[in-house]
Length: 134
Image (cartoon, rainbow, N blue to C red; front, side, top):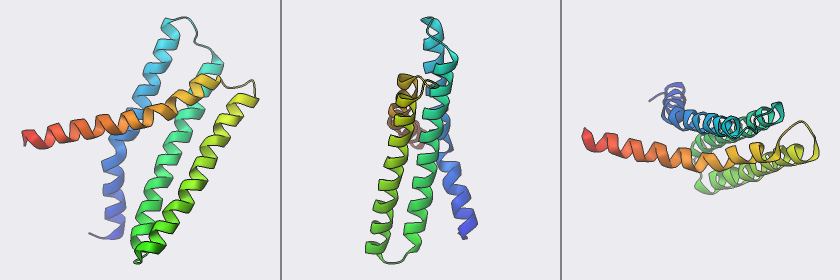
């Protein structure tokens, strides 16, 4: 498989995870609306949190693809660790921004960060069910 095809296939594979993140964030916003706590701050926080998670996930995928091309497993592992540290700093900066400014609701910013593992788990669950039925 050529490199552009592999990258495109990788993004097709992770698209359900990204959509799951957006779906869970949408459900969170609906719950905020149902309990009467929806506001522009909540919407801005949800957008910041979901955007940070999606960017983090995309950068992680690119880092793993780039590490795979390094040839040397130790160099690839070092590269992934370095990008992990930078990605965590980015997520921390998003949370600090939400806490320090009055623009974002901190909880609505933090919750989408918790949704990512759930989105991955759901994707794996449905993927395995799909493999069993084939």
